[in-house]
Length: 182
Image (cartoon, rainbow, N blue to C red; front, side, top):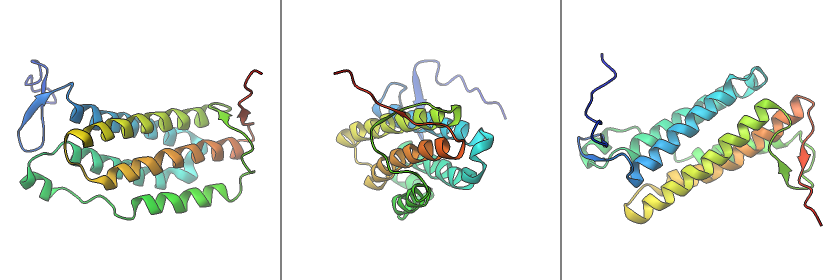
């Protein structure tokens, strides 16, 4: 199978169901940013220190792929064929965050991203998640989308923050507190 089609050379792209829209459309921005987020989570998972988290990170990646497929589909017939978003996805992320946080010291200040390469990557993933959420909010204003996806993204950015904190803890690194100038 060829990966290139040449159909996008004019600046348009195809949605599931055959509709074509501009590559700069809000819908493309939304699911493109979900795709970018998915890649960053893959990078977080590639660090050896994240091996205990890989199963959960893969679950998240699959949920993001499902969310992206929903955003890439405007045709109701095609949408009916898609896998459903997990209605317990956000709750599952909350439980996972509680588990990660159970061994961590209390957070006493804002922290700067960094401290360890894996934690820094988790923070990049967190910020891309926030951007994906903003893109989906903008899309929701223009077109109906499943609000469950927005809830999931909101919770996921919090979970990625916790992943960053957990990685600092398990690597014996230090969190970098924010020290504003007086």
